[in-house]
Length: 170
Image 1 (cartoon, one colour):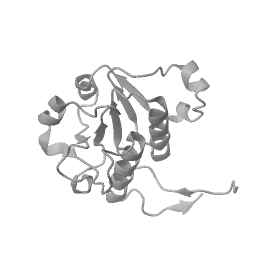
Image 2: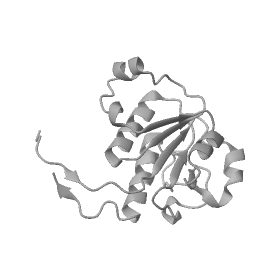
Image 3: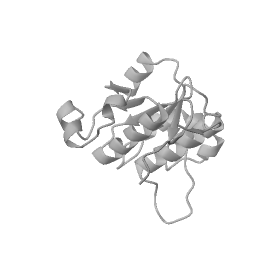
Image 4: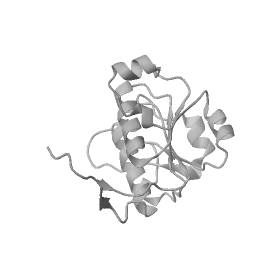
């Protein structure tokens, strides 16, 4: 396998924020954290987590890129909003009626995803009805895996904001 240069782009400024509300499955969050490091996107973990993220747990899981992650942990989405008032939220749900391809995501916005078992709570979706988006599928699955959904939405938002243009090998 080649260890030469990789295809690189400059980070989007301000960055997109990935927000996970009560994530339950450690490997999903680990994969999302890796995607966040790859795209220079801060990761916000909100509410009760289904796993530990202390140094010992992260080291044991072999997440050697965790030290590069810009990580924010919040007790609630309200606390996240207080700490980051300029972050405009976009909520992603399998129950959405509009495609993520219609979302007007801009630099500095937050991409909010719910827990693997139940997604985002209805109360939250009802609070932001004009900011709820989904990923269309054609097969019989209910939804995509959380880490796949984050990657699809994040890279599309980066592409639409010009952040993937001018890629060079470095």
